[in-house]
Image 1 (cartoon, rainbow, N blue to C red):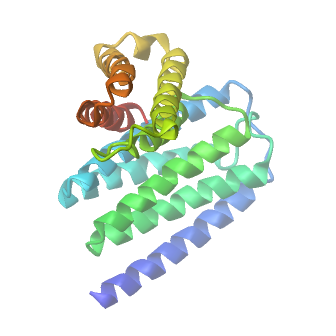
Image 2: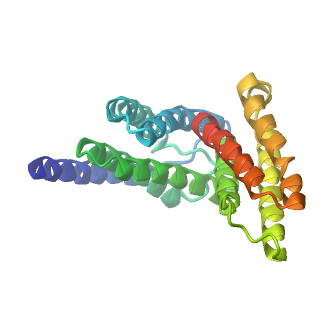
Image 3: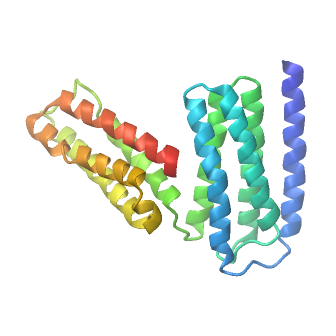
Length: 253
């Protein structure tokens, strides 16, 4: 087992080194035309779709299917690097930053594969999450807005609301009531923002509407839980919201 880990580590180092060399060479080239941004986003989304599926399999402990999906993810990402490493869209002003992000994603994918092959499913999942974060940070730094990043923010807002999933909440404290209300409001704002950001094609799909509208319906019950100081009702609301939130991340994040 340790021999396999050492071999995997060496492979990761070599691949990261080669990728860094390729990207460094590419940084000397001029940016692509503005129209290339849409192509870049589409190519990244194709890879990200495999990331979401792989993460879902890892969450449920399905190692074999996760391995297959990570293989597809690495293939899709290699296509991104091949096309854009030496010809970045001009929406990305900083070539060094762009190259560093591509290198980081490539390294994280090698790490995910290595961790999964050694049976460390949670570590592999963390590497895939790091890929999502790296891509999101790159886009945000350059003022690029996509649905996946909005879903990322919505997931964080839902996590903040989930803190109040506690049947022992002290409703007599104003900070408790205010905390529940404010976190629910923030989550609702993020959902509305995602609904606006989504393309018309995505926004009109039955799946997207079911998740967004279902979550909003759950949020509409939060004021009642606060008014009646009903921790059990709030628990049921949060459980349902988590389900919608996880599916949003799985399908559109």
